[in-house]
Image (tube, rainbow, N blue to C red; front, side, top):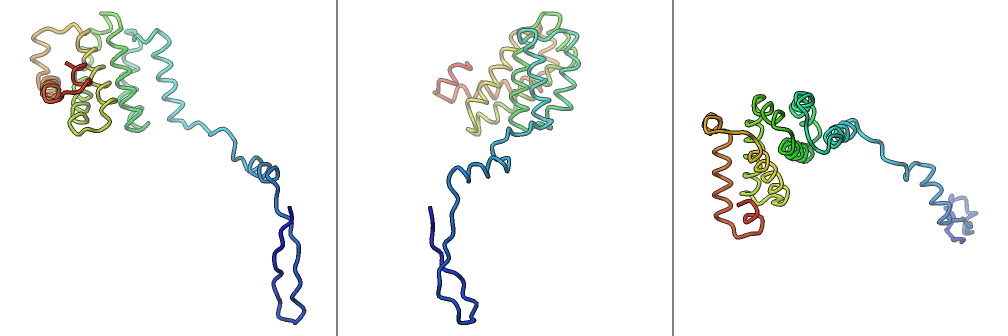
Length: 191
């Protein structure tokens, strides 16, 4: 295609003519984009690599945690995961709690001994706050379900629950009140 564009006049009295200028074809525009790296694969960030490594470490054992891995995973959750962003942190915590629920009894006992109930309480508290604020209810519901599944699987007695009544009891009561006040399918599922 050829496009006519007027030539700039220098003011020396010579102007008035037009210069023909060729525009780029679609193929040439595509080649230019390709050469500039527009279609290159995005570079994986270190946070994304660490997240994938965390998830793959959980999936290697069929989404169960062994006693040997428990301390490493807990330290990762405390140190590394918060730097991956809030949404990724929540999802990793939910996945981890679901894996704890599926793990052996010995691992669940070790989880309770490593202040795992405080972690469940923090996640449950955040999930209830998001449910009450009506923020991303589906994801908050999944977090609450992961907490409830983990609590159900843990070998807890009255003494343990009494000791952690502030960290688990208050968020649990909040969840109970929210479920009673709602008439949604999510509330019915959490009941």
